[in-house]
Image (cartoon, rainbow, N blue to C red):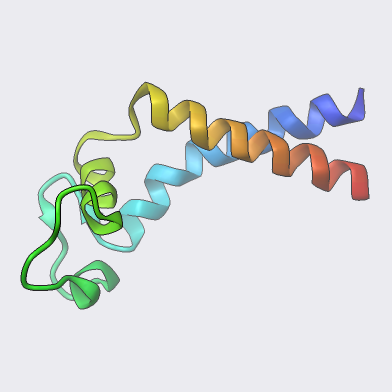
Length: 86
């Protein structure tokens, strides 16, 4: 039962914090923020499907259903595992 609580907390934290983390490093709805970490790693040509392109897409449009499910699942697994250790 304690694993379920850890999974719920971990999944919730992951889903809520992922878009915030993406914005904090500089991937925003208006594009890459000047002077940000994202701007410092941006190359002259960003390839479609690259990590940079995916993060910018998340910054502009959010995680979407598949992204939310993936992030929530990873967070739930980490939360359950962390709760098992404690």
